[in-house]
Image (cartoon, rainbow, N blue to C red):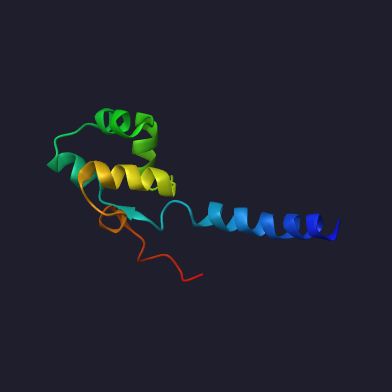
Length: 93
């Protein structure tokens, strides 16, 4: 029972931290890459398996991509994740 209690105690702050750090801290090169490759948000969304609204949210900083989605987007453009997403403003954890 102690283990379950500890998991709950540690899980909440982790989820809260992830939620609070999502968004404005991660800048993205997606709009520039889309323009360079002459892609609409809808075309990119279809290519990586998400909705156009997800691409919009990524571009305006309302949503931070999962690692899998970041990988798919970077791979679609022939870039590394670090070339597409700028994590330099995130605090060291």
